[in-house]
Image (tube, rainbow, N blue to C red; front, side, top):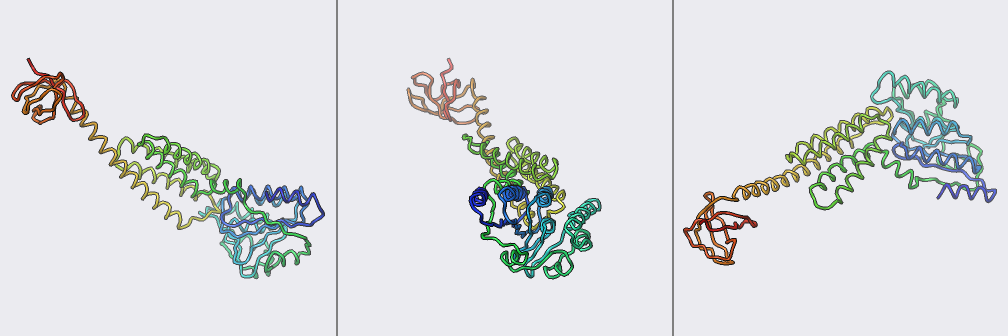
Length: 399
């Protein structure tokens, strides 16, 4: 809606507008989609400038590349700005420094771009990328290189003094004034439904949780007569696998998560809880591999917390499945035992009257019994089992 308003307002009057995009939290597919669409709309509508408010600890490599490429390839005047109490670390540094003008609020920080894990090939590739940004924007190449090689972090004052950024400004209005950009209105663009959904399913932890939670719900749903659990579980699994795929961490993490879900489903066969835990373990391995394949995405303590919670819920579901299997096995055993009674002979221990129940001894156990036909069978007479109704035997007198 904001993008539509941008087009309408600029086409309908001569009002000068600066567009501000808020990039807070993880840099993901939703953020990339929002930046690309906003830059196109701003260019088509004739906005004076596009300001990117960068406040992030990092993100996913592919969306970061898309944002940087869209900034560099846009015909718009782009300004990167770290707001008060913000920071542009890892992926955020690449985005901030790729803009035409880079600015920071006082006492904010930028840098820490060393890939994780620090593989020499990846480090060299990321360093050259950062150096190309420095050359294109006329920034301090040595400092930007050290951000990648040695995880250099600089305050706004240090960055301005060393030529990493262009200026320090307290807020957006002061920033535009310092750059001699006069506007009548500032239009803030925030994530819409599309970018929010892409951010949700494109977040590695969220996508992983959707996959594992979907598997556990599907497992529970298969033991119930309704199809609600199966529908919800399959929907979550599909969203999760889709999310793991668009994270661009390779096919292995998504495949491991899927194998983990399949392993959980074997719990229906065994019912001892181990398969549920093994399935979550495989999915956790996939999550770790996903993070190891993202050089700008730093693992957090939340990974451990999410994994432990998943093991806990898997244990609960496994225990639940174990109890269900115990009941089913008892039921099957009872049904098999009753089937074995058919045709067996026994002795009446308590008279069986017409339409009334007596007691018979069959296979060394006492059973409630009633006659197949409305006749009286006296105690001591021999009978044969011809049917079973619940826990009551249907018998007839042996001639």
